[in-house]
View (spheres, rainbow, N blue to C red):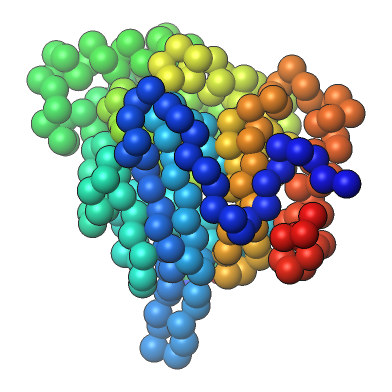
Length: 280
Ligand code: ADP
Ligand code: MG
């Protein structure tokens, strides 16, 4: 007996009607990604397709090594697909740009010689988006939004892991990207801080309605953060299923439905061979 909202691929997902028009904000079309070394070729993903629509909190979920980070790097423009395309607002992604900014897991993503404020201002100045004064104003605005207004002049090494991740999020949001890319941003935090950061991310989304592509290997985190979840098979990553996670969030943590769905996702990721899924 299947859970009705769980649609298993194939067939491809139907487009949801949206008032924002037909072109997805970020689109992956048959994306195959490979690493080439002199000795061998490692295939990271195999023909992965998905559409991230305006305002989505779209989650890539799969086990370690299934190519999630590589997909995110391809969306950011750091990695070129072996075949297939990534498109931003319909245009093929060919290089990094200030319209896509990444928040990583590592706490050392902030240059230690810059203050918190200077870190947040840096991409705004580097891309010549804003004057110095405008950049400072905007940096302080977003630092306030992540609760760090009082730490603008502090240096990163004086902050906790959670605070450093808040700075990275403020820096990303301040550029007002078309897509915010997050690669397991809370994975290195303790459980309580991680939960707090998930809450804060969701309330920032409530306020700003940015478009998010979020990578995690945690089923629970995917259900809490995402409104749509793409399940990827183990290495190399292939699309296993896409599901509507709209109904799940912090409010439903621990409910029987949440548990049942987590278990179902676990089976989809690890147990069932793809062939039997089509009939499920
Ligand atoms: P995930 O983020 O899902 O854990 P990755 O995208 O980091 O997966 O890696 C996907 C696959 O590509 C893995 O098998 C990994 O070992 C391989 N890989 C990642 N980076 C490199 C690299 N720089 N050179 C060679 N292989 C790599
Ligand atoms: Mg990764």
